[in-house]
Image (cartoon, rainbow, N blue to C red; front, side, top):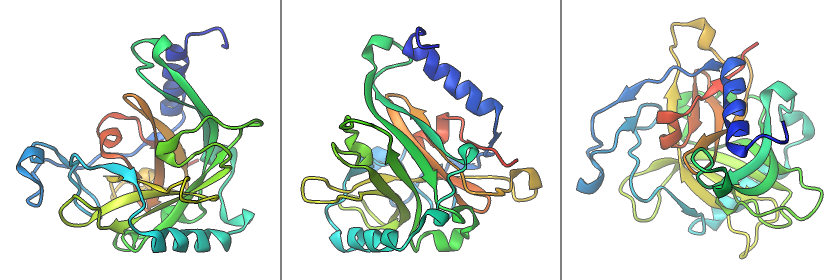
Length: 255
């Protein structure tokens, strides 16, 4: 295995995930968002608790609401080991990569070795309550030495844990309110900023009991040139970046 090119390892990883899980059944709304700018109205909306257009401003440093960041850290400080669902089949771990790995293995840039763990009960959240904001999981660095930074997920050199929050929030430079992910490093500081990314909802079929989440799960998903995060954020649906919601195998093992 270790001698295989990185692009084959990545393909094999995705295949194993698809084979061992039940895919979220996607429900899309192809109508343009009336609040979007003219330049973005060709983008599609992922249906869910909150309609979402993939506008040009879709991620960045979350340095415009330090009060919320502090609130997330305060909440995280009350959580104990029993509050995280760290069973092996409900988590995911890998060395995060960046670059055109599927096209040219030499273009892959290895980053930090990381585990993603869901918060227990995240899958029980009602869609109507998702906008209130919840910690849905955390990222844990598994590096034995100084980790290689992966800034988009707030994994900086020396950062050991990052708390993942999802909720409604106004984003500067965008009309209306979006559902966003906020990643807050446990060692948050002016040099280690929290980051945010737009979230899309992929809904499962409520009439089919096979698609009902029996537990929380979290995964990394590959999105063109880098890794993204996925989680069972509501009772019959999952949250991930819009581009991944359109292209990736978003799955959860409900056994």
